[in-house]
Length: 189
Image 1: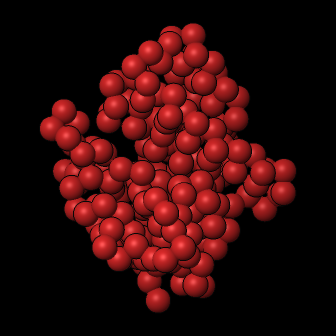
Image 2: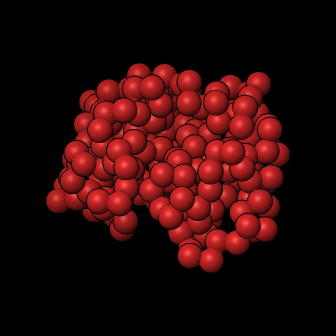
């Protein structure tokens, strides 16, 4: 059975918060189908949501990434590193919330970027947390109010960013003409 992803308009026009889910599935070469919001499974509230081949049904981006990471061997095998990957997922969601505010201050933004530089690694294998963080940063660059720019990344975060841009997943999805978020002001990703 293919994995099922549920998101607005089946991601035909925009990826939105389903991007991290799709990136993980692409990176691992997992077969999946995308269904629109009319097919949202019971027991989930907000989209995105997934149904895995093992029968897990869950929503919330951080929970989805964690489940996929474990089912698809994209989770760190060390318990402490796995806990850190989950923390990065939760941090990424908090960052998205802050980056959408019109008063996203330079000082606060720099604290976030410095934090992300400290918890990412260009040398470590890519894991599920990396894909949710990549999505959060990409949304802040491209889809919101240009809250950040890649030129603001501390050196370590910039190297990690370039590693993520070169992943099989990003190269598979980027440049397909879809937007990250709906709206005429958002450029194609």
